[in-house]
Image (tube, rainbow, N blue to C red):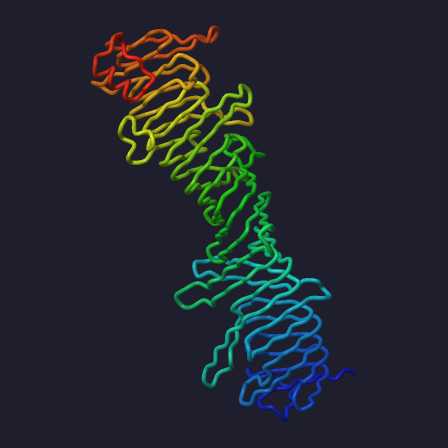
Length: 494
């Protein structure tokens, strides 16, 4: 028959053996125990009640006694089936644990099972819990100590350093793989939530951390995970998000590279900062230099992209896979694509209110055409696997010109331009009291009118020019000067 020993530690020596319920002071129990005057050796079902929490193992060695302490051993070695059940419901599992409460450090290894396993549940004052699980072959602990008069000395884990092939699971949604990781935690107070962050980083500059989320995949040189706010911040990241702008598309995706990425899981929002480039499978590419936000939503259980918005210098390029033609829009203001409305809004900066101030305006380009305006609006249509632009509207101080240098020049100014990329039909219009000015070198047309319509013949591809409203085929001296100032290629009438 086995003999079970319970020891209540109140003094260095001797020990008093109890069979009753342990007190709140340092409590030790095991199947066998031996004491040589300096170290206490325990074997078989070891249980330690400590200021850090409850410790269990098959073997333990307690050393470095300190007089006057509620738990007089400051160095604890635990072996085989080690479990540390912390006061805040966190738990550590390993094969070996060396805990030094004088230096407030700890080392945990798992040569048998392979991985040290740490789990924690974060209770938020705002409601809802977050779960984190960290696994690594080696873990180092940084401890904190709190001594209160006439009370048990309390210890807590401030930092967990994981080394060599770490795996972190967060909320059973995200899996983070890295070479190293640092878990930093601060206990909740009466006014603040528990604060916890995980920082993951690779072993060298050629390696990356890896993030998995459903079918999404991201690589980054550094990852910070805010456990309370559910926000992942990543440096030098690249990846693939499995969702699309298309209403009926269920297999679309976005590929991206960015200097800095912030993923707010609660708000279903990804924010790319710095130089960024995304490729949306149904739409095209967006390149930015400042901020780009991707907003996600759920429709009938399917994750979709609801909005893409950038601020600062941005470029959008759509390439038609059938005709190989392209449409390009550039701006320094706001660029926004709305999935529900199937449109895009593009604006220049606040300084883009003067005709000819090209640097602050929106720029539109296709193979034969270029235009500047204060703002642009694009309508899209969903067609199988693509979003195709069906209408482009340019507003405010519009300057229009042909781009092929080897062909006769064409230019014009207007307050609004509507354009159909499919039919190549274009309508230039002016505000009340203003005029559209237009010149086509090939056809020898100079025109001033309320509206100018450019209609392409689908068979001959020749453009028919029509004036509407107070049409004049000669331009005044002032009108000639305006066109010449804006377009150096313009040739005034003799």
